[in-house]
Image (cartoon, rainbow, N blue to C red; front, side, top):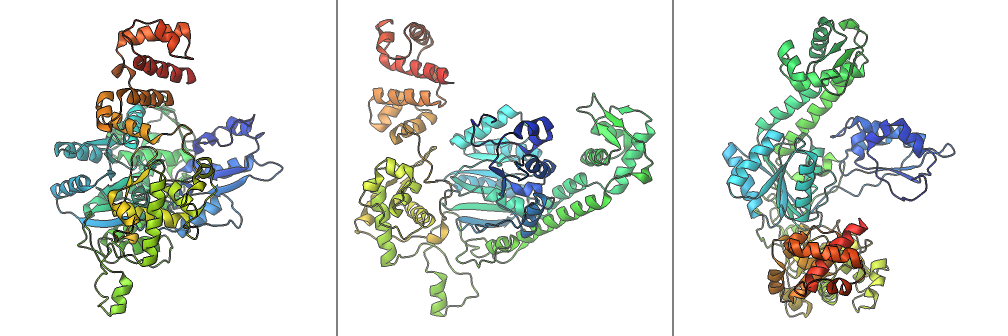
Length: 638
């Protein structure tokens, strides 16, 4: 960093506890200090983290010529009060505020009451089974995660459980498999999700009630980032509030409990106390171990005790002040507890709401937009996931004088001549890109963009370049998503999902058929940035081979399914290995042959295959050499 080798560095807020780290940064010229998940800096936010409060001091310490670096604070879920507090905590003076809006048309918000555990688990299973994609099932506790995972597996669903109690390697492995598409459904606590950007999540189910509307909307907001329809179901029963009441009481223990614990600690008459929270619970008769742990935090913060790392170092009594002279900020604890209880009440209000759920969310976050054509469980109680409902727009109902007291029906509608022509232009562009690019690039070409990847690939020479220049990028990706839902465009999987024309799409493009679209059920694609270039050696055909390999097919089976030569598939796998994809070389080359090839490569180098071949027995073919050399090259690069 001091040498200027890095333009962008990610730092955890906890890192700024280290004064030496800040000192080391001072000579570095910082042009932008970006705070992600900025709601964590606010005590009124749903995920307050004390270490975020260090960021203001850190930014001031990095000032050059007395001037702090520019600061940008970003968050997806912040009420007006939290936004104001973010500016206050970071000492932002007259900051410019940019709010993109909180409405997500493509998320079908549903609240479904349940009366028994069997009813709840059955509905959870049905929601996961009926979805044509991956999803997350959120549960409130580790115990619930393990129980739900086990029961869903017994019902025949392939799931993985994720919570903070798992070791780091296992959590990383589960997340990697989920992101790669190898695991379709994750049952998780809210420990799962931060930093997860899987564009094609088709459902999010809350098995338990979240603790706040902010937490709920952040979690459902992980669905449908590709703009395609996704269902978000909250399974609700008042009994779930008990878990949150327990958490609140454990996090903000009452004054008598903190004083009682302190008196017990004083009574031991020890300089260092070596007791775990469970031992204190049994010895002092305080049942809530979480409350004991929180009470120790407040006593330490007030300067009365010092906690070591682990039981071996124990708790050191510092001043032995009388209980009536404790310096604990009781008002602060009471304020925070009241805020948490208010958030829980607001979450229950949402679950109990009898009118539009989308409108409730927008009002909660201070967005005054009026919702139209909503598919929430209150506006469309009979609308089932995956059901096709044909209807006219709400405006047509109003114009006809139809009774407006009943919810407007929603679904695909006939396109105007202008919209039909736009659809044909989009489909023509998809056809000309020959299944090698994603939605963002299609939209960029139609807009006449001069983005680097458009010009570098010669896409500005296509006849469809600039045909829809009057439209914004978001408008076009939203239209493309509606065409995908209607079956006119097919989107592939993998890290770089490309789009291609379907037989129906070709018929519409040639004006032999018209299609109805549901433009209100989709959003713009926020995951496919046209400014981001594909890797220089990106190949859609190799990506297809990679997808089939991940499904467990052998090279021979992949060749048969794709109607390609085996040699071609082996060449694909070699390139993928060199790129760093997780391909087990031992599955492709027998161990004795691999050892011979590696020995020959060590003598001859990795520049070419022919010298290595000449060193080996005749039976070892180029395909095996190519695979092993790719693995060696990858190892060499690493």
